[in-house]
Amino acid sequence: MATVAIGLMSGTSRDGIDAALIRTDGEWLVEPLDFRTVAYDDGFRTRLADACARAMAMPAPAPDPLIDAVAAELTGRHAALIAGWQADVIGFHGHTVAHRPDRGWTWQIGDGAALARAAGMAVVGDLRGDDVRAGGQGAPLLPVYHRALAADLEKPLAILNLGGVANITFIGADGTLIAFDTGMASGLIDDWMRAEAGRPYDEGGMTAATGKVSATILDAMLDNPWFDEAPPKSIDREDFTIQPVRGLSLADGAATLTAFTARSVALGLRLLPVPPLRILVAGGGRHNATLMRTLRRETGLPVESIDLLGADGDAVEAQGFAYMAVRALAGLPISFPGTTGAPEPITGGTLHRPD
Image 1 (cartoon, rainbow, N blue to C red):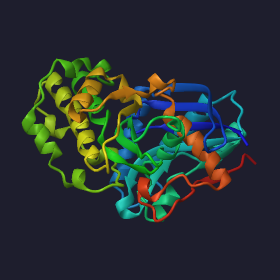
Image 2: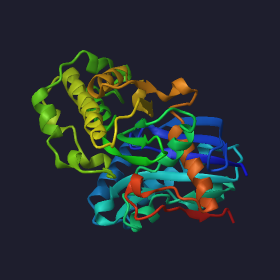
Image 3: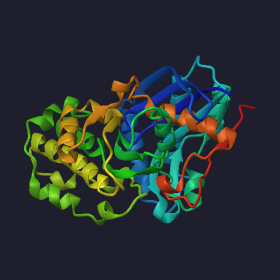
Image 4: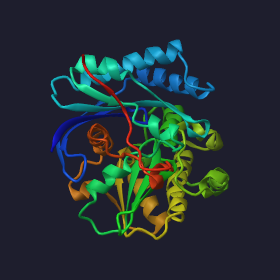
């Protein structure tokens, strides 16, 4: 039976909130109904970045005045964005302030109970926690939704999400799912542009297009054993920094960080059982024409925006969390051994009722 659901996503790019309204049965039926997005102002973006830095320095999640204040504000911003929508359930991702599956935890801030009261709707939050507690990576979670979107497409196929961090979903000819983070996507590029130019991102990749890649720095950044680890695997946004490109010109730094993202994806493809026929790209990074061109060159594969299929590449992540909330209510798995390394297919989430 189809359910109307809202999905909410505040991603690692820290640029704002995406909200999607869909009708779905949590399996093969997916009908997009509406989509909204709101950008974070500079002040909140800075507070959110500070909360992430504070969380990464902690040995485990614990009460903290700064993080708690940002979490409350984040929840209120989510509630304001979906005002006027009606649905049966909300899939609330919150915002990842620290991701440490190697230590047995992942931390997404946002108060699901408060959101349920404010919105007057049931909320499923903490969608990653059960997976991590079972021994999985807790990420990526979108593959099960990617498989539904790609139901009628020729396979093997890869769907690449380019947010702050990049993750890839491989869908085999037999429907097998393999997924993992490949490395950074737009996160470092955005950090570089803010630090060196006072701009939030490299619009269209125009800055990188005028720069020259530093092969020495690129090779040094890729000289990290994490890239050789077998999937499934995931990283935190803070695991890599812009420090290696300090001293380069604005354009050369942007070019080198863009090449770092693309080369990381190419290295990730080597970990798949067979090459995909093509790569469909979702997320904000697909708007970066220089990054898309570099991906085609580095992978040697057709790299296309998922929008060419009639999907909205900006809405996919938020839609995915709406879809997962419906699956969680039905007791269906949202993560799998091939996607997160969990020992078995696992459903997840904590249900909050408005009353």
